[in-house]
Image (cartoon, rainbow, N blue to C red; front, side):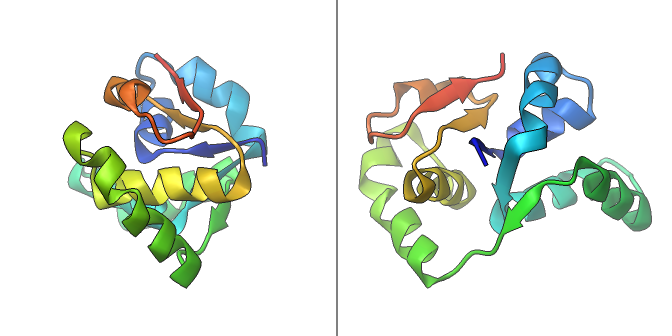
Length: 126
């Protein structure tokens, strides 16, 4: 894996939003936290996609899904102070903590992350 995908990046790809081509170029060597995958599933269901179609669509991406474990729980929790001023969510911190743990950048569409000063490389898809 060369990059960790944020839920916003996956949704940009699936919804053909601006930045989709950037995500498409990275997806073959990307991973996602199970926490962020859950966010994607929830957004697709909220948008009216049937559950089976959600599962099939996400499986077609062939993303490496990394389980959220105790180590990652600490990583995400420790990021709370450095991300509080930016209003980042638990899911955001799970994504960032996973990238930090593996020493790879994060790909997101959330411009707010570019202001992050936590030693984690952030790439914006748009």
